[in-house]
Amino acid sequence: MRYAIGLEYDGSQFYGWQIQRQEPTVQGCLEQAVAAVADHEARVTCSGRTDTGVHALCQVAHFDSDAHREERSWILGLNSNLPAGISVLWIRNVDDSFHARFSAFARSYRYVILNRWIRPALDAKRMSWCRTPLDADKMDRAARCLMGEHDFTSFRARACQARHAVREIQQIAVSRQGNLVSLDVTANGFLYHMVRNIAGSLLQVGSGEQETAWVKEVLQKMDRTLAAPTAPPEGLYFVGARYPEQYGLPSETPDFPRGRGLS
Image 1: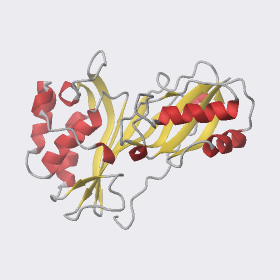
Image 2: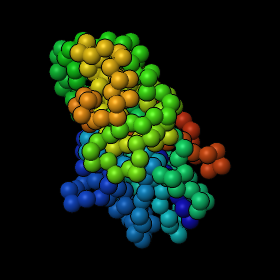
Image 3: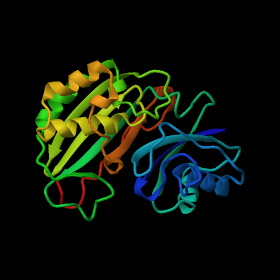
Image 4: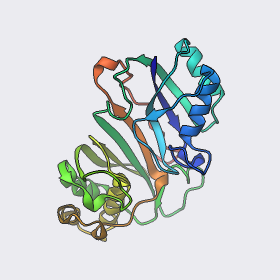
């Protein structure tokens, strides 16, 4: 049987999602937990791999197992075998056509910036920090030019292995709540470091280093060297993925943590 799971994790405690020489990784910990509960090894595939330091509010993954467990038993068993930085939120039995990565028709990310002149202490590893005052409205206007289908070469990391850079951004917005400035992006797919590269450029607009029209110019020229440096990973959250209704997966996303006394 194939199982789909939703999980949250604190990326500051892991070397990204994918198994590699450096440990621990989210995938590695999860596969060990599945093996402990199912009594056999299983490969776990996610909807979107995250880098070192990047968090997830509701990452979706799948694995195959012949083990029969109730939903509550799966969740309790997996979480009791996972480190504190990872928690399984739900699990569903799905048909074999489901694939956490290829069945998703949209994914959402949020990039969070603490905008105050005093550096953070409590949430330093869960958000980016900009001491320069940011104009969130100006950043939002600049971000609107990215809506729709475009070639996002200018916001693509050099190490990106995607066959092409054309993606469709379906929703994008920048908003402020107290000292927190958030960039929310939903697209049919993302390139390597795409959200962090967009965030880096919008930060230059918000701080007054660039005008709102500059982001559109960078997009159109399809040249990564013209965009701003990549924003730090601490502020990035994988919010969730959307799937066809036939799979019956939870559509709601857990509430986003606003930080202690920051909003």
